[in-house]
Every structure is written in C-alpha cells, then in structure tokens.
Image (cartoon, rainbow, N blue to C red; front, side, top):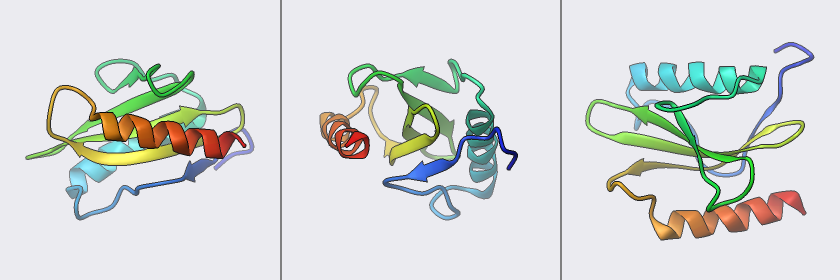
Length: 109
C-alpha cells in the first residue's frame, strides 16, 4: 500500500473463501484494490446506491452459483464497507438498505 492508497474499513462482512470461490475472491480483491487506488468503478462492476446515501455504491461480483454484492461508501480518506451479501433477487432487499443507512450514520458520527 502506498501513501496515496485509501485504507479499507470493514464495518460489516468480509471477502474470503468459502463462501466466495477462490476465483471470485481474487476478482473481488482486484476490484477492491482499484477502489483503494482511487479508481471510480462503473457498470457492470459497480453501481451507485443513492438510496443508501451519497457516495454509496454496490460492488457486483458474480460467482459460480451466486451473485455477491458489497455495499461500500467512498469517504475522503477511506473506502468503508457496510455489507457483503449474496443477492437472490433483482432488487436489493429493503432490510439491507436500512441496515447500511444505519451503519453509515454511525460511521459518520
């Protein structure tokens, strides 16, 4: 990590094998490293989540039999991870959105 990389702050969740396959964990790690370096990821890898808050996004990582989502917030000095979950429907569950809003509020305090 260089002096210019943003630290990764995990409030909830982790990326490990299992439950992620080894290949998916590597893909997620590559995307997380890009975020750390300051890259702005776009579809299909990431999409904004304004329903959670400003600068919140959903990282999209496909596994063999699951679709993983990593909800993150881009702060001025860190990348903050609010939730990691296997997505089972097209729409992000309301419970996930609400818990991420609460975690983001606590983080900002």
